[in-house]
Length: 379
Image (spheres, rainbow, N blue to C red):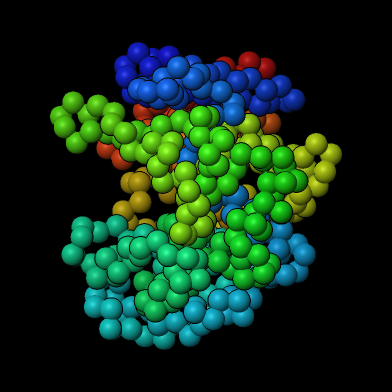
């Protein structure tokens, strides 16, 4: 199944990791790039890739470490650490002018940020048609400055009212930085990456590791739909970013992400060391949305029919295909990466590739991956 992707020219290389009941199986084929030096380097467990939205679960887990040590509380207002989000205004009409607002009914909390219900996020709309959608296309800036720009805009919905994608994870990063007195990246390093041995996970790739970084591709706008380069190893992630983006800024490897996923599946422990409490993992991976909160237009039609949201992770509510069981949790990344833990099967599965899913709806490769994983279960 993986080799078919290479034969068809969809990606130069792809890797799958399956871990179940103590056994780990890695299946890799192809190379890091179609062209250049990367075309001779095979895909491997230590290949560095852009995880993009698979950053979100890591951010939520880090936030839970601060809840556990009582630095943060889930239902306290975030105003103490993020005064930019105090006394927010809310659009009277989500599609209306930015000046037509009403007061927020209550303060924003960490729970709102983790469940993506704090009132702001991605608003699907054609450019120039919805004022707040255009305004929320914020340029990268240092995290403090970025939060200030966000706080100057009205919320789209009242806190706790609706689910909106993406922005809650970026704001959570700023909250973690303020609450720890460290940079966001330093806090992640100290609280998760070092305890889990995630040595290649960061917001950028150092020069001595660029030879292990895969090239990222996207679909050509031409009718052929061929893969064209979206980012070279010496591109965006080769230097420290202006914005340490909790919504999608991390690079990582299959080896590193397996350590993170294994910790969650084991109830918060990794190699005998506790990183999170079991109740924290249970809380993080439970369904936290009401039907009204899931009533979102524009996000993957039909997605919320079988999946909901926990803290930074999608949570499967109904199994309707050959794939993750109800109660499974995980997420996908813009460049085709995918991960889910299935507690009912004691299974972790990770797919690693670097091709943007934009223009390739739902990535047929991902559907075939989950089918292949689950048809192989034989017990």
